[in-house]
Length: 366
Image (cartoon, rainbow, N blue to C red; front, side):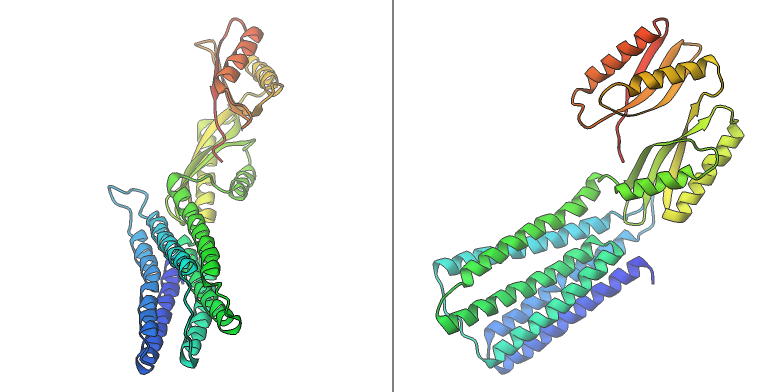
């Protein structure tokens, strides 16, 4: 079963569970003449909304690419995760308001055997459902499922806290309903904000994981003819769509046909292994004991000795312009990149006074 079908299957289980729980509560509520239980049944139907949102988002994300969206619609999954996180936040805020009211105007709960059984069943079902859905979300890397599972878990925690505070009230006549509800509501609100972080970051263009970047660099370095991997840039267009580029160092003795074959093998292999649509650029490394190689070595060593340099690459000498061009990646600690560029240019200009110097400030996007 593929990822999207598994997400939908898990969401359907969530819907069925909430509907069955709602039916159970409604029947018990009618038989017991309890309006509170009947209203709680309606609440369970609304809890199924997060699973419906997940299914709709997953279905829409599977739409094929079109003229307006050439990279597909995978990012819709992140939008559905945001909607569910907002639902969780809303529940947290509503619970907070109600808890503050109980702190100001405490009320003594009235529970009988039937309501206690219904509450206990609801807690167990919600805990099992929430754990199952959240675990599936983590396995499938689905922010929407994780948020939906967390929603069910928080619902169970709220109900459990109500039950605990009711027990304390009945045994010791001490009302902690409002205090306990406020604390849990704040935890839920905090969790809701954290749920928003991941999908929002993906939509904004989050940095790819360090592990993924290291894996890509290691795999590309395994190809014969590659002597360095730089400028790894990856864009996420959904959980299954990564598009990006990187540069490799190759010796200047390779001809265009050999370079073409090498870059093609790299792109095919990374697509097969990771589903990455990749563009591979090249940096030619000067070899031998000629002017270009000597100049390259001197420029690289000069820049590497400078403080605040994370990486230097992309050296090229334009014979017709008598111009040296090189890319420099400054460390995060460097606050004034323009000043660094000016200092490096001055140092290289002193080393080669008859050449034009171009120092390009690059950045570590991965």
